[in-house]
Image 1 (cartoon, rainbow, N blue to C red):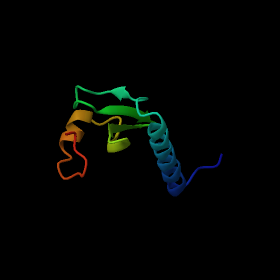
Image 2 (image 1 turned 45 degrees about the vertical axis):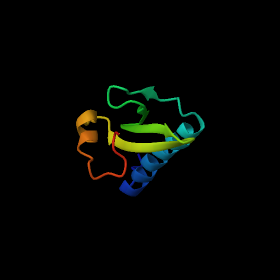
Image 3 (image 1 turned 180 degrees about the vertical axis):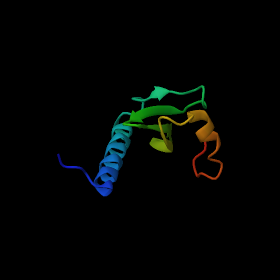
Image 4 (image 1 turned 135 degrees about the vertical axis):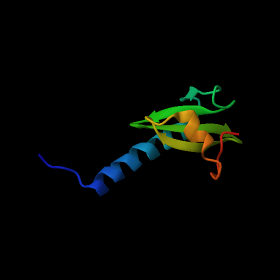
Length: 87
Protein backbone atom coordinates (compact mmCIF):
# COMPACT_ATOMS: atom_id res chain seq x y z
CA UNK A 1 0.00 0.00 0.00
CA UNK A 2 1.32 3.43 -0.93
CA UNK A 3 1.29 6.12 1.72
CA UNK A 4 0.97 9.78 0.90
CA UNK A 5 3.61 12.14 2.14
CA UNK A 6 2.66 14.91 4.53
CA UNK A 7 3.01 17.41 1.70
CA UNK A 8 0.61 15.43 -0.49
CA UNK A 9 -1.90 15.14 2.35
CA UNK A 10 -1.66 18.86 3.06
CA UNK A 11 -2.18 19.62 -0.62
CA UNK A 12 -5.31 17.49 -0.76
CA UNK A 13 -6.66 19.14 2.40
CA UNK A 14 -6.06 22.62 1.00
CA UNK A 15 -7.68 21.61 -2.30
CA UNK A 16 -10.78 20.24 -0.54
CA UNK A 17 -11.19 23.45 1.47
CA UNK A 18 -10.59 25.81 -1.45
CA UNK A 19 -13.03 23.78 -3.58
CA UNK A 20 -15.66 24.54 -0.91
CA UNK A 21 -14.74 28.24 -1.15
CA UNK A 22 -15.54 28.12 -4.87
CA UNK A 23 -18.84 26.33 -4.18
CA UNK A 24 -19.78 28.98 -1.61
CA UNK A 25 -18.95 31.72 -4.11
CA UNK A 26 -21.46 30.21 -6.54
CA UNK A 27 -24.04 29.22 -3.90
CA UNK A 28 -23.63 31.44 -0.83
CA UNK A 29 -26.76 30.10 0.86
CA UNK A 30 -25.55 26.50 0.64
CA UNK A 31 -24.21 26.49 4.18
CA UNK A 32 -26.10 26.17 7.43
CA UNK A 33 -27.23 29.34 9.19
CA UNK A 34 -25.33 29.86 12.44
CA UNK A 35 -27.18 32.80 14.00
CA UNK A 36 -26.47 31.28 17.43
CA UNK A 37 -22.82 32.20 16.84
CA UNK A 38 -23.45 35.59 15.26
CA UNK A 39 -26.26 36.94 13.05
CA UNK A 40 -25.51 36.35 9.38
CA UNK A 41 -22.81 33.71 9.92
CA UNK A 42 -23.10 30.44 7.99
CA UNK A 43 -21.02 27.27 8.10
CA UNK A 44 -20.05 24.57 5.62
CA UNK A 45 -18.22 21.35 6.46
CA UNK A 46 -15.03 20.58 4.52
CA UNK A 47 -13.78 17.17 5.56
CA UNK A 48 -12.61 17.42 9.17
CA UNK A 49 -12.90 21.21 9.10
CA UNK A 50 -15.73 23.73 9.28
CA UNK A 51 -15.72 26.90 7.19
CA UNK A 52 -17.47 29.92 8.70
CA UNK A 53 -18.48 32.66 6.33
CA UNK A 54 -20.96 35.42 5.59
CA UNK A 55 -22.35 37.12 2.53
CA UNK A 56 -21.23 40.74 2.32
CA UNK A 57 -21.54 43.24 -0.52
CA UNK A 58 -22.09 40.63 -3.22
CA UNK A 59 -19.16 38.50 -2.04
CA UNK A 60 -18.54 35.64 0.34
CA UNK A 61 -16.29 36.61 3.23
CA UNK A 62 -14.54 33.67 4.89
CA UNK A 63 -14.37 34.40 8.60
CA UNK A 64 -12.72 31.24 9.98
CA UNK A 65 -11.77 27.66 9.19
CA UNK A 66 -11.53 25.47 12.30
CA UNK A 67 -11.00 21.76 12.85
CA UNK A 68 -14.39 20.20 13.57
CA UNK A 69 -13.22 18.69 16.88
CA UNK A 70 -12.56 22.13 18.38
CA UNK A 71 -15.13 23.95 20.48
CA UNK A 72 -16.33 26.13 17.60
CA UNK A 73 -17.69 29.04 19.62
CA UNK A 74 -14.67 29.18 21.89
CA UNK A 75 -12.28 28.97 18.93
CA UNK A 76 -14.01 31.90 17.23
CA UNK A 77 -14.02 33.99 20.37
CA UNK A 78 -10.25 33.43 20.77
CA UNK A 79 -9.53 34.92 17.34
CA UNK A 80 -9.45 38.53 18.51
CA UNK A 81 -6.31 39.23 16.47
CA UNK A 82 -7.91 37.87 13.31
CA UNK A 83 -8.88 40.09 10.40
CA UNK A 84 -12.31 38.46 10.41
CA UNK A 85 -14.07 38.15 13.73
CA UNK A 86 -17.62 36.97 14.27
CA UNK A 87 -18.92 40.55 14.21
